[in-house]
Length: 175
Image (cartoon, rainbow, N blue to C red; front, side, top):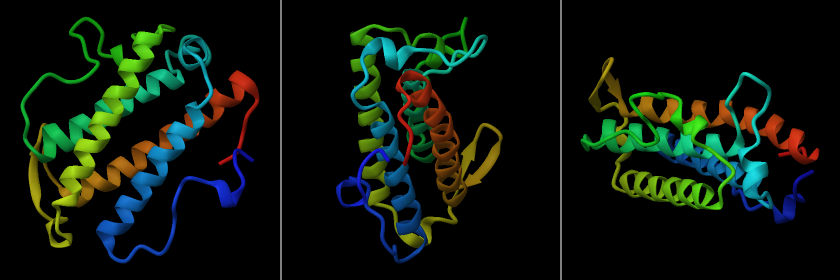
């Protein structure tokens, strides 16, 4: 086990209401991401899984920062701006640019933490009856509820990848 139940920093309970449930899952999965990456150096965080995959723990941090930005800032808030960790010549830059450089690691965590804080601030102002509100998206229209479910799914899927990546680095498994 990664940590004993009494020392687990992730809080779970019996959230009351749909919005509280989405928020609890997001917080749980975000904390799990940080746990999967703790105590690793830049080389370990940037270590790729198996060729030809570009996936690494550092790439996942960058990718999830981009996901948070895309859905909360660009889609739900309607903020116009460039996509994080995207280049015209490399749509996979969130992963291919995740190199073993302490500055890249620091930037990835700072960006992810900033995007999570901005998302949480937006959620703080959201009322439970706003979940059905629809917003424009590049593929049409999507509800706030659909976005939140997608984010929970996105984190859950990538944390499965993080489990395997971390186990390959140092054999650590659990949670």
